[in-house]
Length: 288
Image (cartoon, rainbow, N blue to C red; front, side):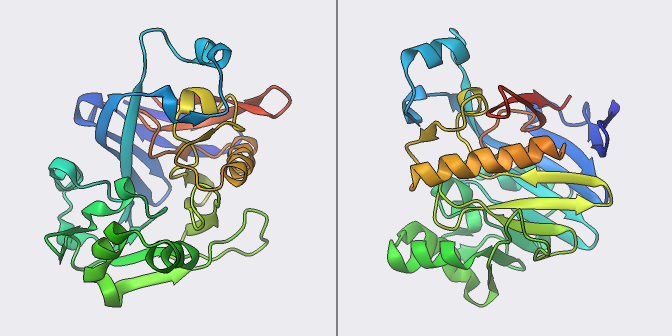
């Protein structure tokens, strides 16, 4: 099944049926980019990760039967490039198995774009001290690298990055409001999304009129945080900043009709936002 979503802009071509939910792979085409959302793990969700909520909010937005929490990564096939956005934890070799099912070997990954240095986003960069993606360059914000390897050392991050010493590329992410933005690859722009971590970065893919925004950990419990972006999670290092960033970036995506893909949004993991409640809340419509 191929469905074209047209809402003022051509948002992309979404293919389903080839890879269904049972495979944990959802494919999305945005111009020159073939994007694959890869589910690494799914488990029962826990509202205890939220900060600043109450029973009334939970009763309103959380189904009585419970909900699922997911951890995702994204494979982007671009002209001449195979690019991963985050890598997951490496548990069970799930991400490797899924990229192989898409015809891509780990040795064929040219670049890994890291949203931030929390363990469920980078650990599978290495195994037993060896690079899992030996021909890849690793891209991440300079601020993120400094924080987790110097200021507040995360030894797991240090170990995961060690095999790539000569192939780490740092950058200063662009601001949404910037007139001119940095592209690290043609059509791929890192956008500052600080708060969850000091250098947390989201990635905007643009090809012609087609776009996709990979939002990393902009939110963790979508059922609540789309409706009330001011609610943060225990994982957010600077919670007020994370809340402001979440509101700003979600509003940008909604107002510009840009699909979003998230590392903790359940399958299909990609959807469209609509604004309501005078612009303070968002309704998420998953792709089909």
